[in-house]
Length: 428
Image (cartoon, rainbow, N blue to C red; front, side, top):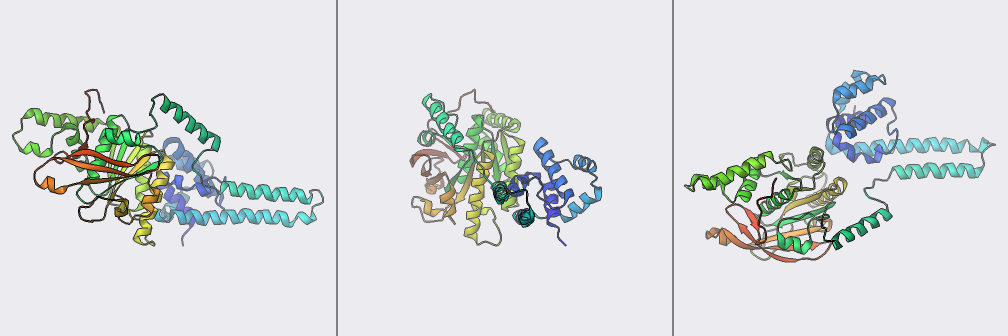
């Protein structure tokens, strides 16, 4: 028989980063009805917030101090639930928790008629305070008070007036940075393109550029392997295709490739993760783990959005809406920018629009920026490896939209413009 509290605790022991999704119960001092459950929950939370992990030996030590046996942990592991049920576990515990608090309150009110010390108004105050406390703890928010929000806006305005654009993450494509100023954290963007046009290439180009500006980034792929992603980044930075090694191009050319490969190998600001588990819960865990690995992480690229699986009970369009909304929440919670690559419907060679986003709707609504790529694949077939292409900023919640002329190098799979010249001092 399933024991929901133990199933949740076992899951948190295995994946403590999921604590961030337990706000609904974590804001209460004692969310469980059993004392032992509350103690273990607090111990897991304390260890995770202190070190970013939960060593089992340390957890058992803390439990022993409160007379919790090792058998308790064995049962907890046996009951461990599945991540996709996390919200169900939290909701079930929350329901029981709030009803118990209301039951206690009802007993107090039931006895008030026999109380000759406290007045009816005293009891009304007790009810208001108790209900207010429950209501306050039941709120799941991720924001700041209005005065602090206004202060953030004014500070940002002052910095911009002084030429300080630290609030914007420069993409390295000068034409794009001129139009949108740069990417912002706590937002999500979409890079949309038809198959083979270059959505992965643009995502990797932007990540390569950002890390050269000392901005830590992550790339999460459900398609390409880590080595394929690394290969593309090395090609972009060296200007040398991997296929040049099969030609008599000379050591000077191949040396550039090897130098950039060595730099990327030592780069602490780049994280590349491949996964075959496309479930939304797993994607969320990987992103949180990236942030734990490098708290300075600012941008995460996801390749690509329509391949992520939402709740199995939903139809495909509703799943994509769920994925889009969750990625937006992750960006806010972790103070990062999430850039999700997305497939466009095949509509011949016509210029892409937001309506071409597959299973759109929620994607268009949630995204802060939408970037659409258009280039003529026929040029590449004819052997033209430096091609003209257009990047269409179809949505920019914070400002201007428009079309930008950029270039694409089909040999190194890099997008660039005439202003994207890297100096010798751009270190990883």
